[in-house]
Image 1 (tube, rainbow, N blue to C red):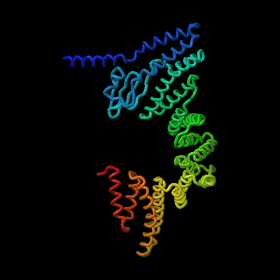
Image 2 (cartoon, one colour):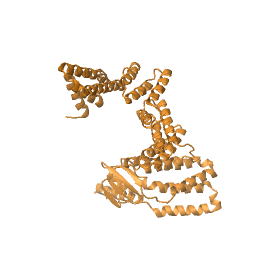
Image 3 (cartoon, rainbow, N blue to C red):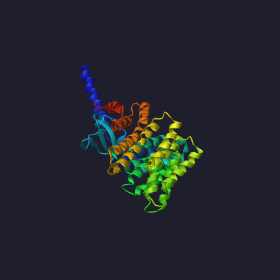
Length: 442
């Protein structure tokens, strides 16, 4: 009986707690009305605490609808966390008074704020905290703590918005977050927020060209704040923002070009930047020639001949130009510098396969002019010899990375193509079995 009583008490406590979490709009409004009266009073309005409290009122109202939500929250706990039943519910979507929550696999994955508890609370909070700092800079630690709770709120919304493809919302909240950091109590803008907003704007530009201008603004702000991402993709997104505005001003083409050139110099292994350069040089008359890229890279290599990343970039350009010999020569240089590098061995195998494909196409194109079995066999053998050169590189790559599904698949394909060559059928069986094992195929 005692155990049952404890269980009932726990259930009652849970119900009571959930009721307490339901948003009391009238209470928030009453606090703000009291604050309105206080700032209208000259004596109280001259105190930093009055403005700080006003800002806190707005922060509390902004964060309350989502303060109990987090990615991974169990679906069974959702209603209890929100404190009220949803007004609408469909497969994986719960619509509450202020938020819509998205569930997948029994877990909360995202949410969107549909209505604010207090209208214009964000702007009011900004103004209030700015005034509080102006009146008393010594309050900076308290102001910073309040601002950071709101910044984290917006950062979290931005992150989960990507899961529901609410890209416009994500841009908005990232910019709100970074604007809050301009308050002197923090005084340091996080360049990541500009980068996140900028790359999303570059993505949205394909649907609405106005977003390219926003992307340009935000990404340049990130650069000004010395933002760095590991791959250098900022330059690729900024290129798209400039390129997307070329119809209104041809100067944007030159900006696009200079952005990519700066990017490839800093991040020579970035294939996105390289592809952007080749696209720009081949699609836009008068902008440049892919050969210029080679000249530029070769000049850099003259100063840094042992820079493997520059040789990688050189190989990329020649591959795009379908100059497989120079492409392979560039990667052979990388292999001299880094003989046990998986990527180098894999790509050399891949490029030799591409060269084999080229030989095969040429062979097929002259089939009608072949007049004897001997001539046919000689051509066929020549093609197989071209493909065979890929095999040792891919096998070495497989040794270096035994769990590479891509490498196992290419080896399977290559060995099947060469299956009539001595000893190759055994290799095909080996790599076919390995591929199935790595892919989990029975």
